[in-house]
Length: 347
Ligand code: 5AD
Ligand code: FES
Image 1 (cartoon, protein in one colour):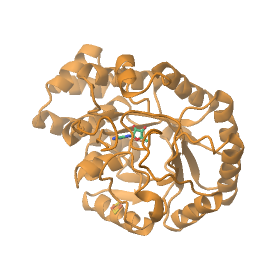
Image 2: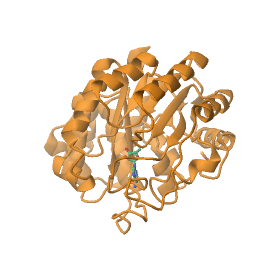
Image 3: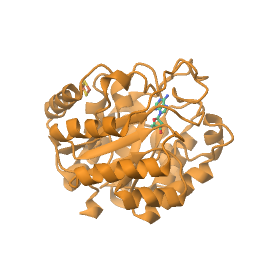
């Protein structure tokens, strides 16, 4: 199996069969070998720097009904909220003072936030923080909408594809969503000029090694700037309440593989990874990840943005998360930096 890792390291890709073989035959020793290689590759590209992104969860209203997600429209127990433009700008100000140079506006697909409102918010952030990157994570939109946000000053867009296996996609989402449409959005975003992030959950219900291999092949094809990969975690108010969560072990193994496939990709150690294991984010960094995304949302709304159960950091001030994160990153010999942290190809 080490041979496959060597091949991946050199060729930056494997065949469908080889990915499957590598994943199905993984063991702790092999994982250590993979992580060593993955760290070497990330250090060549980004040194020991870890970029931070301030996550602003500005609305938990959503018109979609993804079966795994806690804020799906049919969850009537969620207390819905929206941040005002003023509140969003306050989050940015607090974040800026803490050293954040990327703001990620994330929300459900909330029709209240029309293109006009979004463009206005993006414009205002762009005007107040010309040295910061603005990342959007607000779901599927038309080409024209994506273009309008880009022209207003957004730089990056996160839209996880969730799974690149169409049958699997249909078991995670109602009929109104499709993998084809999701992929089209990702290609549109790239064409417009965004730094684009796709991604998937590890251990989501009905996921097989074959579907993971599809994810890897799709990632290679799209060649995104960023990739969000975290474990699935059940939410008690969804139909997947009694399903198992994804594992730390498989998630970090996949992070290592992805680092070798796309040496310069921006790869977060996700909050979900920190939720399933107290050292999850550190282990993610040690497997090749190079981004963390602490929460900048007001504490009063954090519990309400509950995509899955037991999410960490819901009771902590932005400053606490910032400093906690610094301690964690330094404890493993890396450095939390305050630059925009663009993809290497942009510099
Ligand atoms: N467990 C883990 N991740 C989840 N997401 C949504 N619901 C869950 C869950 N139950 C992820 C999806 C989405 C991102 C914002 O959060 O991948 O794209
Ligand atoms: Fe939020 Fe540690 S990162 S408290």
